[in-house]
Length: 161
Image (cartoon, rainbow, N blue to C red; front, side, top):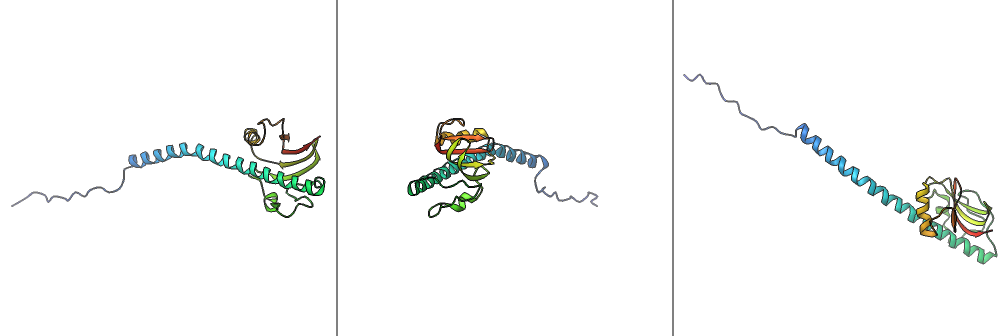
């Protein structure tokens, strides 16, 4: 008579252990921590390029208007297309929020300037504004053709006093 107990079949364990899952989570976290600053740099560079391009396009449109009409258009509020600006003028871009926050504004006789294209109520830091200024001008927010004329106004000067 065999009194031995029957052998139980040993099933292999399936799934991952808690330690294995935690290792994967830590690796993903490290990869995300490395990727986030690079993503932010690319995003900021894109915002800067878009703002520089928009300033150039609008400056050309206003200078064309001045040549055709013998002077600058009248002052207009934030996001408002100045009277007489039509044709190739990018009104939808002018009326939308800028890449660095805030609204486009046509300044005529404001802050000691005769004519300038401004972004009012922007959300960009001074460091980012200096990067934009360096692409257009001298990189100094207090001098040149691109200036921070007030705490809430960043201006591309077309004509100064």
